[in-house]
Image (cartoon, rainbow, N blue to C red; front, side, top):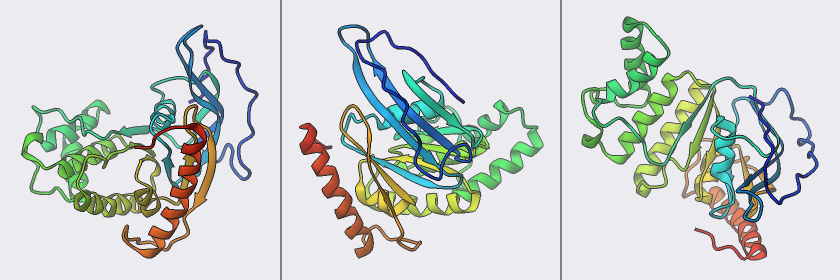
Length: 275
């Protein structure tokens, strides 16, 4: 997917920014000089400014930044739900699927029905659907809950159903917009383990938005920090801590403290207030 659109806004389109070294057409996700402006003449609001970012196939990248820095906007552009004002967005890693903070399950469908629907839309045959749904629910540890309705599940279980439904779409790129933000700490920690296991077993490329710095270090191969609005890539932090990681470990805490310090500098520079 490559998209480009012009904006009727009082905002000068910036010159393209080269991608970082070593990336390009081989990346699963490639953003090159991406700018996004909302509004029209007189009330233009720049959300992203010349963002260049590449995510390798199979890489787990976490996006961090103060509220309103354009993290969700960036995900929407990668998902094809919106188009950039300037620059290019390319997804070379195949189909994308987007997971939100709220599971957004169909309340009248059972767990099996919610996952099965994604297969129906792909026109998968009924016998194959039954086998595939069973395998997906087993993968996210929901075997035995097939006949439950969403309101009968905990928040963490609903997110597991959402993950199984995303996997049913056979997407190679998983976009996650604060999927665990509304969950308690223990449930979130358990789902970190589940997500890491699924990511490792499937080889998915993951772009994960979060406000939780420790969560980003716990999960990511790399943490990308965006400035306050308009969002720009201001720092990248490779995470070289051996997996499996624990969110309470000293290694995770130390790198999270480093990133938090950089985030605070950015917030002070722009006068923004972090969540």
